[in-house]
Image (cartoon, rainbow, N blue to C red; front, side, top):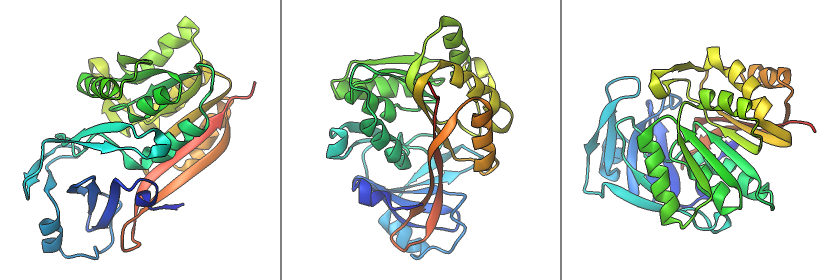
Length: 286
């Protein structure tokens, strides 16, 4: 599907894209960031991009680099989610790995959480949870949430946003997501809704390596064991190295049935697309 996130969430806009970069607005701040799927020609010129933006991330490694200031702007700033998501406030800041604390395309997941909320204290597990915007939405809609991420600074970031939104029902865990799931199997804990947003490659707690092509199948096998019958598993995939049909077959082999999928091509103002990846939804039959 072609998705203009700005139509759903006015606080965000993909302004222009191309030449391996994207020009995007988060609230009042406009940033230039790398984007591998932007392999077309941008509509605006390079000088116009730089006049428009507040900062640009200049990449020096696969995920590392530094921000170049183009005009004055705050170190941290607040965005507000739509009224349909209870006007939750999220805190953004520039990081040393090009991110700012939110993946705007995940608004499809946030809306799904809101629509599918279990009215009587349903349980939700957010794996590879990043700064925890999905966890905030889950808590705001009545879920008892367990949030897991391996980076302490991201967990602390999420905790601060929970407090700023006067939410309480989130348990924050700094841990390696696959290892946490294995322990949950032994503990016999089950969840109504499980979200996973695994990176293509990374290191968990204690520098455990993760490679999605190698590790995703065993991870799904384990997740399926802690998903309650009739529960839903939401899996976000951004890497180009795994075809959607392959992932669907992995989940099918683990007793999960696909119930919905979103292949997301993000539209800029000039109708050019970048790849936002895919979100796949699976159910476990009771």
